[in-house]
Image (cartoon, rainbow, N blue to C red; front, side, top):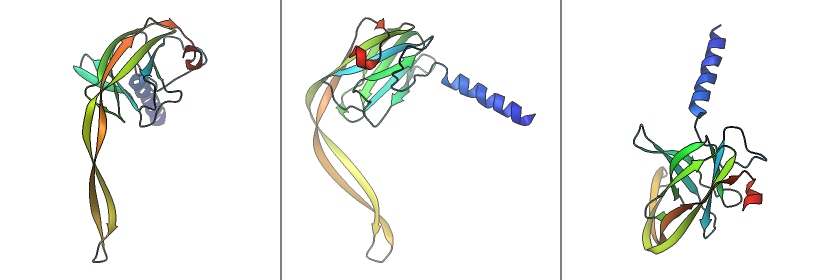
Length: 175
């Protein structure tokens, strides 16, 4: 009996935890019921590591929906959410960005809302990197070795523009 209760409790927690969450970079052959999609693409296009957060009214802050240290297949990012109005914050993990951009989107059931994120070079920034690794010491033991390096990187400003929703299509047919 305890095992059944434990399984039921685990399933309930899983359902509640996933309810309202985005699913990462999806591209089903047809739209799922009670699901709207937002497609993010960039101008210029490139291999970007996306991070998208959603405004949480109760927390009065943004909560991460999607984050990946790899570029999505096909360049653009598609997220699936429940239909409704969302305030989303977008940034890139592999670029130096002044501030994330914020965009308002309305998702309709079975439709895709395109969002074009523009990157504008806004000067250069000095990026310092710190690398740590274990290495042999002169006394025969091991110690943590730290090295620092600096490099210049382009600094970007982001902006986002939402287009009118379109009936669901796979990413290959839409872009």
